[in-house]
Image (cartoon, rainbow, N blue to C red; front, side, top):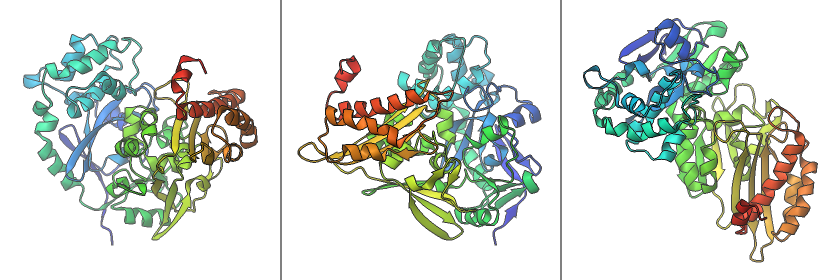
Length: 488
C-alpha cells in the first residue's frame, strides 16, 4: 500500500516550506505576495502571458537539477512538492551587491517604470545559467513571454548579452550550492503520495504513474493538472470550481521521451521544452513552429499530453501530429489502449476518453524518407499568441512527381482538430503542380465551415487554408524564394 504524507514540501529561496493546509487552487503568486510578503513578482495579466510574475522553479531530473522560468500567476502550490522556487529576492552578488543580471540591466538602461523588470530579470537569469554568452536569438526566445511597454526591448537584449561581463554562472549561489539543494530536494521527495485537504479542496500528488492510474480510476471527477497553462486560467479568469486536483507534473516517468528508428514516443507529461530538441531533430519543419507555442515560460510548464487531452480546436500540436499519423496510448488503471490521434477528437469539448482514463503517451511515427512535411501557425501576434489557423501538410510523390499520398490537418477551422480529407482526395493521383493545387483548394469548403470570432473571420480562415496549401507547394517545389519576393 502506498504511504501517504499530508503536507506539501518545497524550498522557497533558502528556506523549507511545509504546508498541511492550503487551498487546492492557491496560486504560487498569491502565496508569494500575500502569504510570504515577497512582492517582487507582480500580477499583470493573471493568465501567464505578460511575464511580470516570472520566477524560477528547480526540479530534479534524474541526477540533475533543472531550473526553468515559469509564470507564478497560473502555477498552483500543489505542483511544487519537492521543487525549489527562486524569486528575485534571492538574487544577490558578492557582499550583497547587485546580481550580474541586475547590474547588466542597470548598465544598459533596461528598466523604466520597473513593473515588468523583476520578471525580465528572472527570465534572463534562467537563460544565463545555461547559456552564459547567449546570442540575440536565444535572448529573444527567452523573453518571448515577457512583455514591456516602456523600453522597446533593445536595452533588455543588450543587457542579456552583457551579463557575463559582471560575473560567471559558476560563482552564482544556485550553481555553487547545487549539490546541497539536490540533497534537500531528494529528502523531500520521499516516494510517498501527498494528500492535503478534503472534498473539492483536496490536493493529491501521486507517488508514481501507477499510483496516478489507481487514483484517477477511483476519482474520475478530479481535475488532472500537469503544467496548468490552461487549467490555471479556469481559476484566474473563469473562477471555476475545479477541485479536487491531481498534480502529475512531478512524475518523471510521464516526462520520458524515447527516440528510435520508428519515431518518437513522448510521455504525456513531457513539456514543450522537454520535447523541443527531439522534435526539432526528427521533424526539422517543426523547429521554428515549436518556438511559437506560447512564451518560454509556457513551454517550460505546458505539456504535450495536456495540449492534446484538453481537446481544444486551436491546440498547436494536434494538426502536425495528425498529419504525421500520430497515435495515443490511453490508460485506465492497468488497462491500456492505442488509438489514432485524429480519432481522439469526437466533438467540441468531447474526446474518446473514458472516465478515469488519461493520455499516457504520444507516438509520433518517423517521416518516411523522401516525403514532404510542413506546419504553419497563423496568429495576430507572431510570438506568444493563440492560433487563428494552424495547418499541417504532408505529401508523398512518386518518381514522376505524382502525389501518391497526402495528409492535411487543421486547427481553428472546425470544432476539433480535423483532417481535410476532400482536399487530400483532390490531390492524390494528380501531378504535384500549381494546376492541381488550384483545383484542389475548392474542396476546402467540403471539409470545413469555420466560424468567425475575435481571432479571424470565416472567410479569412478559408482563404488562409487555401494559401497555406499553395505555400506548401511552392516550398516543396523549390519556389519558396519567389513566394517570399511576392512574385508567385
